Length: 384
Ligand SMILES: Cc1cc2nc3c(=O)[nH]c(=O)nc-3n(C[C@H](O)[C@H](O)[C@H](O)COP(=O)(O)O)c2cc1C
Image (cartoon, rainbow, N blue to C red; front, top):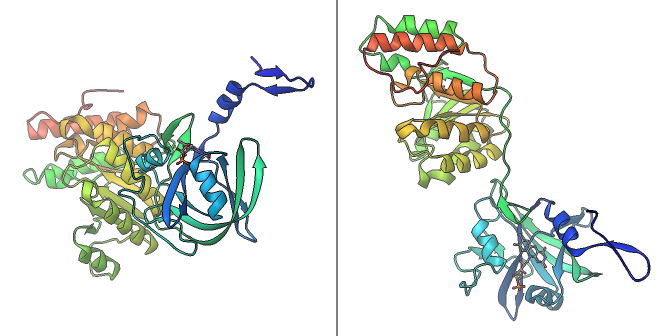
């Protein structure tokens, strides 16, 4: 079906449903456009925001004629643009009028004013304070062009997206290659000191190495970050840093902030450690999405635990969210995800790596014989 329809004058135009369907395929960010009337704030969700000019700084937004916000901006001649972050879907729904039970759309939204007096969100990715300089007729919409008087980027985080009536965020592609490290075996084999060197070197031969001891920071104790940045740690390398308790649900901002600080100070690899087993696929996704914006050009690594089999789900979420380094333990013997399990996941997902998985599996079986107990790992019996 072409979606063409005859018009009286003999011209053809697209039919309404086809037009809407086609436009639904246009992915966009999400903003809340705000304004004020008699000193009272009002706002609505809008995705028709666009940049127009750099010199002078101009932006535009298209609003349906007759909706409340349209008429308010036509009167007040001022508007604010607040660009929403991936964790602000609910704000987007409230300001789109999709929560009829909400009386005050600004309830729970921290906002302040700058030059024009319109509300600007403290937790937006960015806000722009604008005064209307042009209004163009755009069919059933009006195109408001605003001069930007002030702007800021209060948060660096992943953006909220809208596509085909769905709210979402960027789905990062799987990396082409990733690295598996062994970081837990030596301490797990403390009771078998004669066997540890042989197993560790067999693993190295199989392509899984143990990186130098890395310094750690704990976002719950900012002194650890200061000590690291001032060079007061005894670890052998400061290029790679472990962030403890990195998936603590209450520590989101502290972890993202700390990672930004580390990357800005030349750390090249930051490993987020699930020290207390807080991680689940949702937390991993959210944390890594925001960390990845801050961490460039450094690399993101993870050290995940494997309680209740959730380790593989977390590893998948991490892989899809920008992690390319995985700190693991052979056999999963210390509760950290097993080296052979992560390699199995890489093979299933066709993520390249430099390890010989069947050889790693053989070492895992030696480990089982050494310990004389079943291994927690899920794949040490899978060959090939
Ligand atoms: C993701 C999304 C984007 C939207 N973008 C626009 C837009 O660009 N222009 C518009 O007029 N309405 C847009 N709307 C609809 C308005 O948000 C909705 O009509 C709102 O309730 C208007 O508020 P008001 O009646 O208080 O002015 C959008 C809705 C959603 C969910």
